[in-house]
Image 1 (cartoon, rainbow, N blue to C red):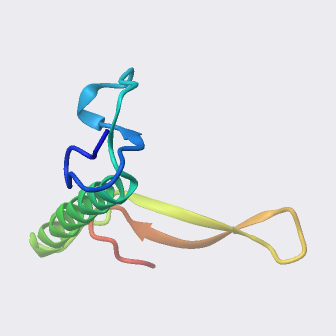
Image 2: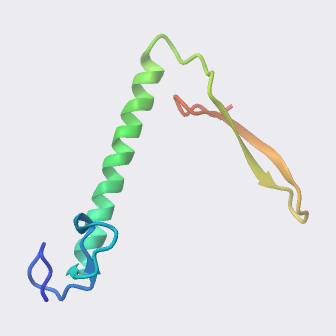
Image 3: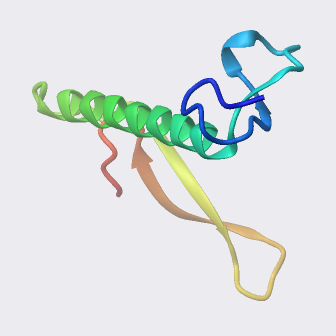
Length: 92
């Protein structure tokens, strides 16, 4: 069966619009990869705009702070690495 998007390559992956139990392979690997890449780029663009507007509105009050942790070299213990505002993305 040929891919339903490009119509050239052999379909090897079930179509995502068919539901989680779809077993018929309708999309080729290249088209599936392009779909996922475009979805991810769209999500990143929306998130960038959200953070930009949050930072522009009277300055960000930095209420949602997230601490990033990293391992101490040579140890199995984590230490606080930096803090980042979830809303505007500013690193402290």
